[in-house]
Image 1: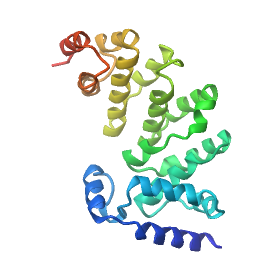
Image 2: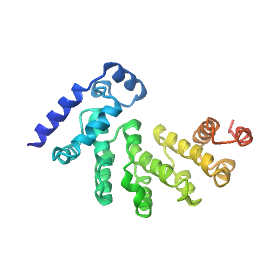
Image 3: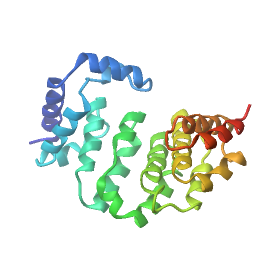
Image 4: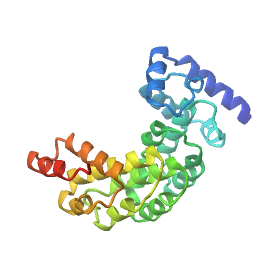
Length: 232
């Protein structure tokens, strides 16, 4: 089967799963995505389809088709990467795909399980991603730091990797804020100096505090102090 035929078959399958109300809902959440590129497939159905497709040779063909036309094709691409069990191949596929990711939702849904088994190598790769210029490559790198390195793998120096990122992009700065809010919930004492010393730009600093105040994992006493650290 040709790559063109594979693409048509997969697109037909995606259209068959369309939910118009869900499409309208999704479009409101993704202002950077052109509405006519959104089909409207619910995530559980798309994940189920990805698992079925991953068992077929068409999956490898589909991963070679970039850029994709539809938002759901991008999400399907991410879900197919998640099914790959070889670390080196996952990294290669991510490097090929991330430059084409054009929205926060596709970026944030990818979390290949095999990455957790290679945290030393992944850390080196994360430092490459966060130095890239592409918004969602940077965002993905920060998300991986947040997902895998805030618990037993945490090191204080990782905070500096994120704090030193400077960007004009909303979706980068929002992820930085999310990272520091999560870090405050998990590693409060180590993170607090970054807030006290205003290591982030004003918008990101205040957004991180705001998100931290919404966390049930941060005590009322800690929240009271964080409120005093907002930049007016």
